[in-house]
Amino acid sequence: MEGSNLKSAALLEQLHVHLASGAGKELVEMIGFVYQLNISPKKLGFDEEVFVVVDLKKGVVSKGPYEGKPDATFSFTDDDFLAISSGAN
Image (cartoon, rainbow, N blue to C red):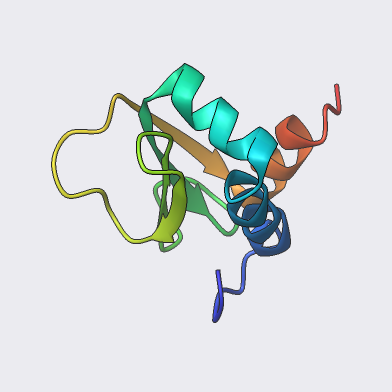
């Protein structure tokens, strides 16, 4: 997620690296879905959204909207995405 101002950019980069590992490739084989994450820096609907695609068919994480229809789309603020991803209550 180079060039991103999101706090969650490092987490998304770690996800990208993990998907290239043996355990990540097993995950891709098991899940096989495409998720689009719409992440707003501060407030949904008011700040510029950053589109992130977690493609668990191909095993890649990319910036930009998915070309086609993702299996699921989630919208978060950057802080909420970090909290959910880290298991915070």
